[in-house]
Amino acid sequence: MNVIETKSLVYDFGSKPVLNGIDLTVQKGSIFGFLGPNGSGKTTTIRALLGLARVPEKSVMLFGKDIRTHRIEILKNIGSLIEYPALYNHLSGYDNLHILCNLTSTPKKRIKELLDLVLLTDCSKKVSKYSLGMKQRLGIAAALLTDPELLILDEPTNGLDPAGIRDMRHLIKTLNQDFGKTIFISSHLLYEVEMMCSHLAILKEGKLVFQGRACELKNKYTKLLLVDTSDNKKSAELIEQQYPVKLTENLIEAVVKEEKDTAVISRILFRNDIDIYRLEPKSQNLEELFFNLTTND
Ligand SMILES: Nc1ncnc2c1ncn2[C@@H]1O[C@H](COP(=O)(O)OP(=O)(O)OP(=O)(O)O)[C@@H](O)[C@H]1O
Image 1 (cartoon, rainbow, N blue to C red):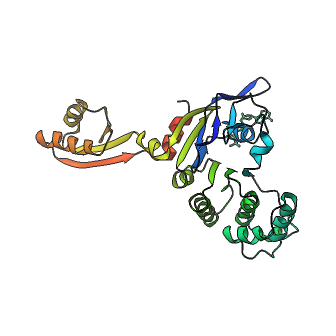
Image 2: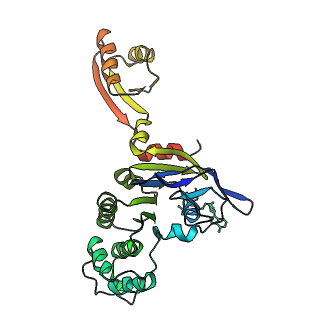
């Protein structure tokens, strides 16, 4: 089942189109990374998912229902953390959750469960004394209070130090794997998303330029083979009969598709009595691919 589905989602700020026909599909049980450069429309999309931006009917469906007509019912099943959590700094983590329990008629025993889950065991300290990472984890505990099926997290690792990022990643994975939560995360920390998410969408100027499994994106990588031989000019001519090549001053770059192409090229060179000094695969990482997908030149 799809937890989130948008169909030709459009949104304008006055005369300025911001979302230009987005078809997002987020499957139940996935950790879905929503990537895009600044200003590409991530926050606007999240606002549309939460019913905070007025969108055309049936263009935003959550749990199979239209946000336009079933907003309250849908929101009961979503926990969200948008930028920084809204917390009472002069109260402890426990007391912050206690207030929310009263507002949502949630049994108090849930507070301890959640504080243990997000590893905030010293819950008597005032929130003003918390690190940013602790505040973010308390924000996630608050989002989980009513045990929603879907968590929407806008840049949850923003501003965290490496240990805070690691803890957050661990928490997100636990929530997904052990508690079955579907998690939608916007981010521009590409490395983080690559390590954490099962699925990805990449947004550029209000349009999706990629959507699919993280491993499918990897398969789209252009792989280069760096080749240096005893006769680069002749080698380039030979390799070019099967692969696109670029000959630089002292190196050949061959565009290949898979690992066995390395063996094919080494055989071509060997058959032609050319000595190989270097035969080295070079893959684009997600960061390079993301840059290529989201820049215009
Ligand atoms: N209230 C507003 N009025 C007019 N334009 C807006 C408004 N809010 C956002 N925009 C514009 O809409 C576009 C998308 O903004 P949005 O905040 O959704 O992008 P984003 O991908 O979340 O960016 P960031 O990563 O910087 O938060 C941007 O060009 C932004 O300038």
